[in-house]
Image (tube, rainbow, N blue to C red; front, top):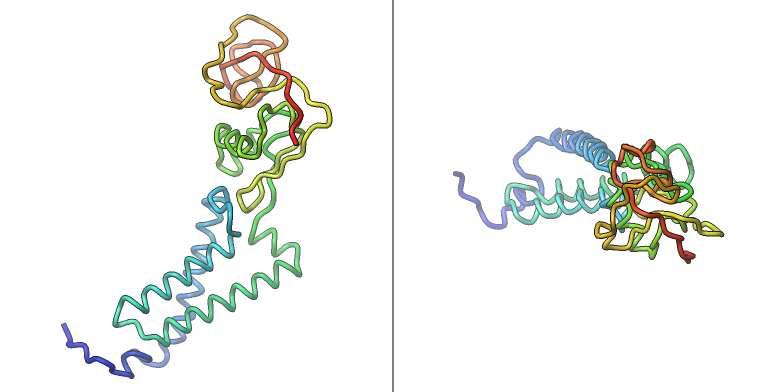
Length: 226
């Protein structure tokens, strides 16, 4: 292992790589930035409840660039500074494109996905966002929803937050306040039953026609959600 000379200004700021290596750094930034963006889009937005996708990516990129330049002596400061500057400029350019062009916002941030309509959970929307019905119910409870019958539309935003539009007149629906699991499962054919998975109100059958769920509980009149 080579002996590190303290305060070797050439090593600190430039390192031993040829000047063309700076161009390779730009190439590496572009590849890693695009790769990380694709991975975050694949993971989805439910875990990014406070930061937008671009801001979350910026935090990761800056954290890596700053951390490596501090911890590893063989990482020249000029390289780290170039990474930070390039990532910030990319972020500024992306934000400008998002503000000016609707297509850019859709491609980068995604678009809202409807996951509930007229008190019934849309399984297609959940599959598109890789979300489970129990996870959606948790998000709704955090917003004060007690029964799906009080909600007309729910959209899962690209940030992971939910937008809720209440029904003016609540209807019979699935109660989601715990302990839902402790409620008696109804096995008789009644018109006021609802699927315990998606909230579809229907008579008892072997499985729900909307989601394939096999458990029914008695629907309850939903309170007004505000």
